[in-house]
Image 1 (cartoon, helix red, strand yellow):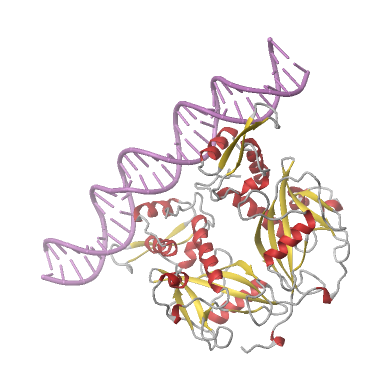
Image 2: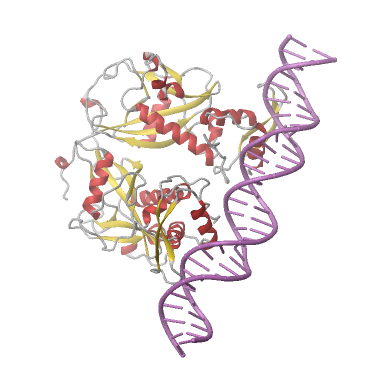
Length: 248
Length: 248
DNA sequence: ACTGTTTATCGTCAGGGAGACGACTATGAT
DNA sequence: ATCATAGTCGTCTCCCTGACGATAAACAGT
């Protein structure tokens, strides 16, 4: 068909962020409170419009920096991991106009300050299990009500992506500080999967996979008990054979 | 920020299709020849604009029907499989305007007719290896030149998605007719992965996985040799433990 | 009819990895 | 000193996989 600007409908394109971290042995997501309609007062995933001259991933990185002050690193480098998740474009997902949102997934280590940087909107870390399973609870706290728009679905997809990716990649280290112990890494897996893992078998698995962990020489007792060796993430990005997620 | 239509730039949103099939023991992709600039005369992935009231997946299904006459089935049902692949939105990916394309992946069984339905554009099945590795060849046939726009990248991502998904899901059956033999299924894996698999171990694996294959009772000799049992896809969608892709 | 070829299918065996779990070590808390 | 906590090393068994031999059932050609 010939080029005709009237031949296609205009869309708004946004990026939404599923920023996950592990805090106090729980998988948490960054949510912001909406200041205006629709869904005023409800929690939502952070996000914003893609600019005219901006790539999708650049827009996601910009929004991330605006909300958290974090900057994504190169793939698999230590620190924040950013990847495209999926795109959501149901015609009625935003009542104001036709919006297509390219969701991105961010995995970050536990941040000391609640949220650095950020704009005027209030933001917080919300445990994903209270957001994803609120229907099971008897009372329905407005604080725990579903997220705005279709963000519940986006969050669910993001959590499921994280759960499956740590099986066969070394991405779980993205939830850890630059130096971490085997036990801390195990608690990441346990928080993301919501299961208990055998410390001895886990230790054998991760220390026996070449290139996964590199000992730094130091030790720490920050978890109590016997001092544990400190490691940093090795160069390996793929875990083969994968870490097995226990049957439910 | 308050709602202001001038606050966001307008985008065109399209869907592009990576339609894969296995023909003559080779992984092939559906490509169409472009009739107008840019990239006039070059091969490209089929696709088109998302309509104003149309969901993304519905747009992909519509384009698929227009190009091939195929209709996607429910997930994992026998027949055509359709899923969202990724979204591509570099500012300069289309010289005419700002276009964000939501690519979808389609896995189809070998179709008897080259392309049924379809519009005026010429279409064909192209082996993916000649499209993805043309730089290695000494001569550079225009027929084998890279695809238009960023479709080479999209194709690469689609092939990689297919390669990894048949590891841990029963999706390889989407490349097979409703009834198929173990050998035919093995040739699908061999074509998609580009490796040779041991027929005996493959047979043990697929017939020993509960819910993967259901015998229909019939046999066939369409591949020559001893008659083989016919199966159809069982209800299982996940393969656990996964089919192991041989090391390179 | 016999032989070779092709494909399907069953069986055997050795090695690797994972689950289950015992044992020991090195800290801090009481 | 004793206990609780967490880390680390070993062992044993089971299951899965890779490698590969052997048999079965069709067809093609002589």
